[in-house]
Image (cartoon, rainbow, N blue to C red; front, side, top):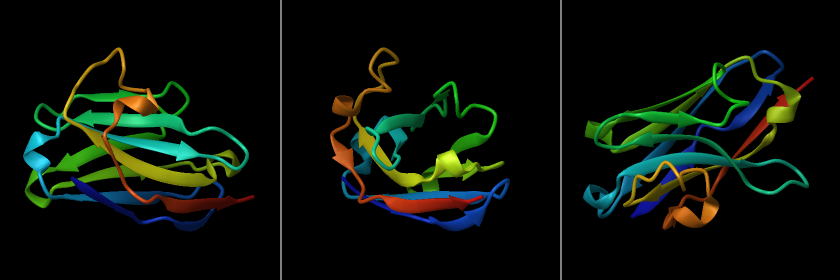
Length: 125
């Protein structure tokens, strides 16, 4: 499975961005699509995940309410709508995918077999 993230850019505080992740290859094997981010000087952290077949979603506590993850099965794509952005949301955002759907492991980096290349989001104050 190959993942291509896009949609990052420079936005002002309280602005919005929509990230996209296009999947190709053996996408029928995927059950979980997720977004992670890595802020400057920080470890990569979980943002949100969506179940590819059922559409169930999981969010990191700090993102819920501002970020929304969705999917388009016909387009083999997952999206991350980010609203009310803050400077601390500045990060490289990565999409990831895995054949499993396990709520006990969904926020763990090692869970995911496939990763995209990342897209930079910069929020100016």
